[in-house]
Length: 379
Image 1 (tube, helix red, strand yellow):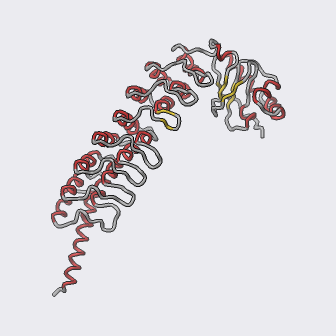
Image 2 (cartoon, one colour; image 1 turned 120 degrees about the vertical axis):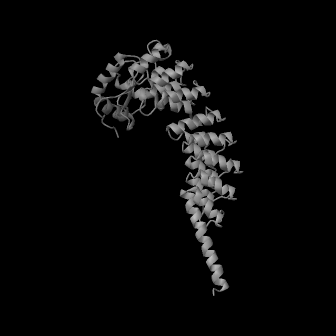
Image 3 (cartoon, rainbow, N blue to C red; image 1 turned 90 degrees about the horizontal axis):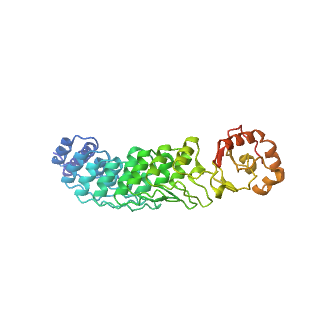
């Protein structure tokens, strides 16, 4: 005959086996097995020493039917891991919108935060799970909530450029996020104009992005599109009312940033003031290096050549004014470099002069890349 202790020990072992089997079934299904195990006495709240509850396991593996059955059997939708994760945040990370809806209907807190401040909406947005993003917004998720690092769902969604991430960005803006949220100093439209597709640019414009917004030095989305050579994006911005002759703080326009003849012609046809016709820039233009972004104010007859050599930079970029080959004194005065360094740069840049003059004869832009062989670096 079994002793009482043996009987209790057998029952505990049997319970652990049932609970473990339920946990495994919640991960992979089928849902009929989950039903059967619960009916046989499996504990839906058992943790078995793990961080994740059985409900969390189901939510984390996209087992929506199992999630519903576990909720119906009394599983705690508010349970949290040591990091603050919940079944809802795990469902959001996997993109299981149906489980998200079931958990919210069961009372899960849609704005619950993990220890790092991440909400279910931020989790879904960062992974580009647009259906989950829409479901959470419809349930009242706070689109302005931020992590402990200060980042919101819109910023996290913009970290990547998959279809799901772009669609999540649009969904968040429609849900109340600021279309002109800044990423350091850039707006979403500026980022999109430079490297995203025209459909994405148009979508941002439709949800209210400011086509004429500027960085703190006056650069616009149209200028970023010109820098990126994105002709379709330029057309989309111009159609939405982008100012083709908006200027930066130092007087540059989108035409100044055109990186190809096609882009230059497109902007010119839209009414861009060219360098030849712009009295503010034709006399003594401010030039910008297309490699590092450094701006230079150079006199009429001065040309900054072999930018790498003069400034010790890695960039193989040159900047140019409208004069001819400068004197050594002009360059010393304009660039504020030592005569010794300048002499070496000037002596080793004869081929660069020819390329610069050829580019200048083709017209109008104030920024050129040097296509010559690598310049000798001045140390």
